[in-house]
Image (cartoon, rainbow, N blue to C red; front, side, top):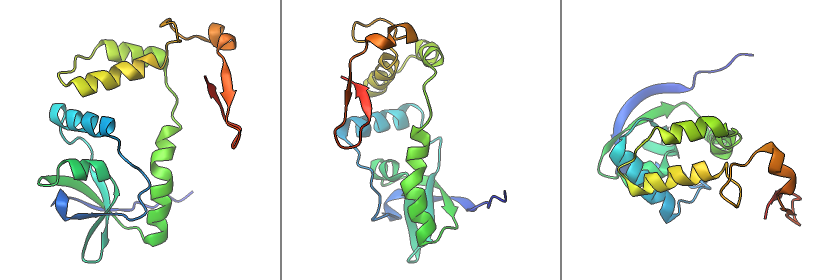
Length: 163
């Protein structure tokens, strides 16, 4: 399989000069906005926004919330060589692909126990992630109790999830 390298360059651009992609389907609730501000305050920029050249400027493909959070800052951007169709493919699949990753409960618990956050929104986020591995009684969720979890099914798509 031949894989193309679509990255043209890494540069810094003032965030308010970047245009959002009109097909960006992600929305950012207040809780996520607060956690993003906390992460940027505690950690800073540790990842580049993904953009493409468009109409004489740059259009955001990934990183809309970071750009909105820091409009007056020069932010790192990876300029990608993508046409309209490829850009829409990336918009449709980039976040969902990351969402397919599974949680290693023990690793997450160990990692969470090793971290002290200054920002309350980040602390809340870390606490919520740790709770994912606990059952309703606050006890560790293991395969041994999986049969006792009440499930419900979406009538439209058939997906099952805990009640």
